[in-house]
Length: 173
Image (cartoon, rainbow, N blue to C red; front, top):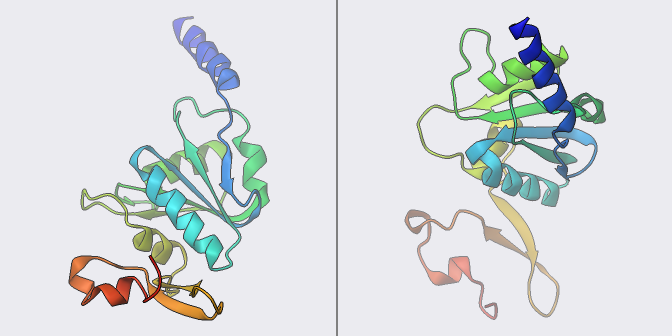
């Protein structure tokens, strides 16, 4: 009797939880799903991928147990669903969140990008994990005045920058 009571409470809670909003494209090729500290890097990865022409969105889960009702209406809008997780793929080849989502929704297109080094995801790691073999390190920007494209290197960490001119083109800033 008590387990049924608890189960009913969880079902009621799942109905009351808001369905997370999809950031970026509302339908397309790829949906990134995360929770917790992956929020910022996932959103930045979606922004960069969209700048490179990808049809991609992101969904950030705030509640994992129970999962909010309505996610099953989002999955069909995307060809791939990729969880971004800071844990191990384990015996079954999926992160823990992907395993939960695959079990709950019986959705075979759910896969995962994982890491276990304790450091937060970098945008590059997410993009290279999702789009294997594709490089997102450079993007085209318009130069001031003539509108001609200028290649700006996206990695401006101190060890990769030799001079200010590499980061800020002359006449910008």
